[in-house]
Image (cartoon, rainbow, N blue to C red; front, side, top):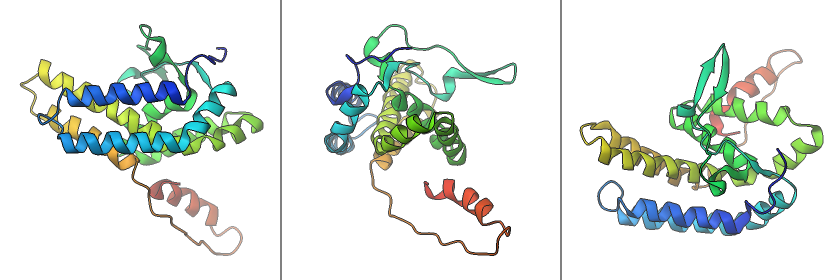
Length: 220
């Protein structure tokens, strides 16, 4: 699909954050605390300010396309042995015409939420190696957007799940699930401490295999 230069970018993403904040506050002091909402919205705005230039540059470079828009695990099935997305967004250009990495971030976030960090790592890396070398370099330059993208996606699942609580009040697990997504949204915006792992050994002793196994566990 062709680029969508009229969508995406920092200004449109700010609208997304404002909408998320409105949705959170509909459940203030019911499922989410007002203090937590203030904290997450403030951290999200600060993160957006830091990466606004990258968002706008990616829009101009053609990374905003008509995407699935709702690519969490609940909208992916295994069809004839192939992971197949379904139920894409058709009712809103603002939700569907987004940065490609923001679309992928929904899947990465949901894998992380379910304790499948290694799978999220493999998914992201498989996406990157599927690109041409030039496109991969450009995509790597955009990875600094992932904390904000992942946080926003977790926030969406938080308020959607909170809304489901009202239509299914007999399900005691739903409020905790909504809060877990909300907490994850905050965690994604908290900078992880840097780590240095030194691996040594003779040629053929398994250094690369070990590094490949360790990397997903430390967020690499």
